[in-house]
Structure formats: structure tokens, C-alpha cells
Amino acid sequence: MTEILEFDRQHLWHPYTSMVDPLPCYEVVSAEGVMIQLRDGRELIDGMSSWWCAIHGYNHPELNRALVDQSQKMSHVMFGGITHAPAVELAQLLIDLTPASLDRVFFADSGSVAMEVALKMVMQYWFANGRPDKHRLLTIAGGYHGDTFGAMSVCDPVTGMHEKFVNVLPKHLFAPRPSSRFGEKLNDDDRDSLTKLIETHHNELAALVLEPIVQGAGGMWFYSAEYLKLVRQLCDAFDLLLVFDEIATGFGRTGEMFAVDHVDIEPDVLCVGKALTGGVMTLAACLANERIANGISADGGVLMHGPTFMANPLACAVAKRSIELLDESDWRSCVKRINAQLELELRPLERLRGVFDVRVIGAIGVVQMDAPVNVAQLQTQFVNYGVWIRPFNDLIYLMPPYITRPDQLSLLANAINMAIS
Ligand SMILES: *Cc1c(COP(=O)(O)O)cnc(C)c1O
Image (cartoon, rainbow, N blue to C red; front, side, top):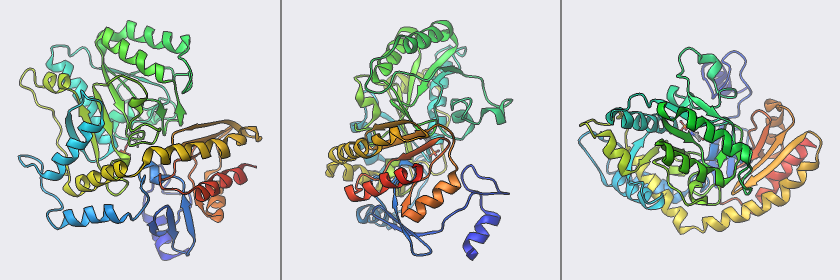
């Protein structure tokens, strides 16, 4: 083991990892396009986009330039009492891209923090409007919204981390995960279970919080767009606010710019993150409509949040350039092409022993196994094969950068095929 790996093993925590018996770790020295370069000289094709972020690939000259240019003006300046062009220009882009009613922007420093802010927005809204009794949240099982306490409280109660924090987490309400698949009509069970919960509990509910269309880290599940229509109808009928977490789905991943664009509805709050900066820096944002913004301040109140690095100019500048790059590239055809190839090359795996389900949407391909996989063993196989794929639980999945070439995508799909056959 090299010195770096040895020190890392002794001293560094990794995501969701034991400090005593950590999973093996690989040292990366550089990354370029869709290739990740290991210390030992091996090069891996990236199938993960570094957890949904690196949509344009790594070391992109335009994104690098945006960062360098901004760093020569100012890398950071506090956002209390100060504003700057990078924040304003990025906000303008986000307002233009997202549903029309969302035109008030809060910049946060990570997805989880953006979710905390979204939850504060809906809680403060009802408090300021004389309904402090509307303080619980409704969400759907199988969700993932981040690792901070507020976000965690709406993650799936089983695969999430609830059992470790039972006494600290607020008790919110969970509707069953919609069983109607993406592309299908909404079935009666899904309609009835959600309707019943809202009918029963609306007096204590501040908002319905969910990931539209694609549930990510909670199980990589894709559900019927009609569910979102129902969700909006019920929220209107029973006076609940509606929060969409598009931190994973935003910026083209599902085949539309945002997952909400699969239907003709608008949430009251929408969170973005992950691919926002093209994977270069951490940044997230919460967009709200006028009702929320004015409601919070109805009694002279203010939104009680203000991160130290709020609207960091470097992150805003690189995010702006990343969105422009999406605009300049033909991202829609890239995602379509990846989608068609994932269908072609992953779909046949459905017939293999041990495979429970194969599903594809946009530039996301998922192979769900019958049982949890051995992550360390699979990861070694993948690295030996020259690809970077990180499974979790019973899920082996791909969400490659949009610039991935067909031959590279084939190698990713083949790697999954080899590993499970
Ligand atoms: C990753 C993720 C988050 C949390 O974002 P972080 O930047 O990791 O804090 C929240 N919601 C969804 C849907 C995510 O995929």
C-alpha cells in the first residue's frame, strides 16, 4: 500500500464508511474528459459523473477558464449586504430555466443545505401566516434528500438513517413509494394512498416534499409523471406547499432540463445542486415562488438562513459557464443517444440470473439485483476492467457524463454484463 493510501486508511473518513474496517480506496491523480487516472497508471472510464455532477466531463477548459477568470477578480466575498455579478447572472439563468413562477433564489453551499433551507421556507411560511400547527412534512418512501438532520428526516425511513437517530428526528409522514412506473398511467393504489394521507392530515401538514420522477440514492426508482399531477392537485385542494428536490435530476439527466418538465405543473420550491457547477465546485440553490417569498415576510419576518460561503463567486461563475455549455451543446441529443444505447445494451441483462429489474430513463441506466452486491469485490472487478462504477445495495447503475462516446458507453455496459454473468 502506498503512503497516501496508508495515511488515508488511518486518518480519513470516506462517505458512509467505517474508520475501523474501511472499504478499499483508489488514489486518483487526475481526470480528463470521461477518463479518471489512477496513481498506478491505470485509466478508468467514468460511469458515475462523480455522483451525478460532472455532466461535461472532467478538466473542461471552459469551466477551468471561468474559475481562473473569477479568481482574479475575487474568489469570495460575504453575501450579507453585498452582491455581485456572478450571483446575479447565475440567478437570472436559473430563473429562466426553471418553471415560470419560481423567481426567488437562495444560494446554498450543498444539496443538503438547500433542502434545509427549503424546509425552513415552508415552515416559516405557515408560521408567518398564523398556522404554526402546519409544521409536519409529507414525503414518499424511498426518497433521499441529504444527510443533515432536516433532510434526513424526509429520507426513506428504512434505507435512510432513521433508526440511528430515532430520538432526534422529527416524525414526518410517509406515503408509499409510487408503484406506477415512469411511462405508465397512475394506478389506483398510488392515487388512493396519497389522497387518503392528505385528507387525513392536511391540517398539520406544511408541505409535500419529493424527488420528481427519479428517486436517486434512495433506490434509483423511476415513477409515473401522472403522480406529479396528482400531487399538485392535492396540494392545491388541501393547502399544502409543494417542494421538489431536483438536486439529482436537474440539468438534463432525465431527458428534460428538469424532471418537472415531464409534466405541466410547477412546485412552490425547487432545489438544485450536484450538476449545477458541472461538478467543479459545491453549490446548490433553492428557487421559490412569490407566494413563499411574500408569505415568509408577511409579519415582517425574514428567512432565517445565511451560510458563510453563500453565493460564492467562484462557484457561481463556474455554474453560469456550465449552464451556458449545456445550452451551447446539443445536450438533448446526447442524453437521447445515451438513453437508446443503455436500452439496447443493459435491457438484455434482465434475463440473467440474479437480476431483478433493469430500468432506463434519460442518461441513467439501472440494473437491480435480487440481493445486495459485494461492493468491494465488484469495484475491484470494474477497476480491473477499466471502468469506474460504484454500486450500492442491490443496485448497479450508470449515469455517465453527457460527452461519453458510444464505444466508451459500450465498455461500461459490458463491464456490468461481465460482472454479473
Ligand atoms: C445528493 C442529493 C442531495 C444532497 O446533496 P449534497 O450536496 O450531497 O448535500 C439531496 N437530494 C438529492 C435528491 C440528492 O441526490
